[in-house]
Image 1 (cartoon, helix red, strand yellow):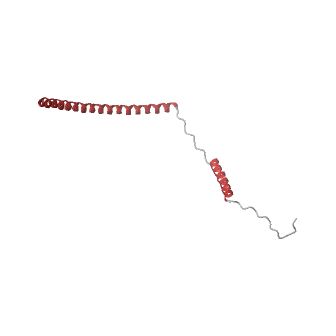
Image 2 (image 1 turned 45 degrees about the vertical axis):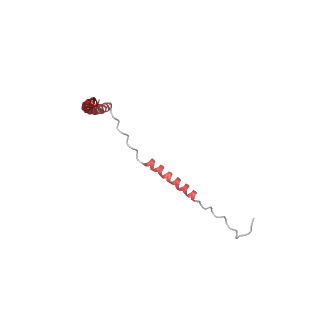
Length: 108
């Protein structure tokens, strides 16, 4: 035992930056947990009856069917247009081949 009355008393340990970060993190986590538990629960969505579901499904099917028919009509119109253009080109090519054959005959 020391009889020196002037000896220093050990000072309290200072909290490091990591310690403060841990304390603040724990407080923040506790705050978020309380906030989550205290917040009102979202209302459950209302159940759809079988009849409503079937009606909506039929309406969707009709819309899809209508869109499908519209696309088929457009495809048919484009097909007819392409066939007409191809026919015109075929007649032009035939006329050019005939003219080229006559030129070939004259040059022989």
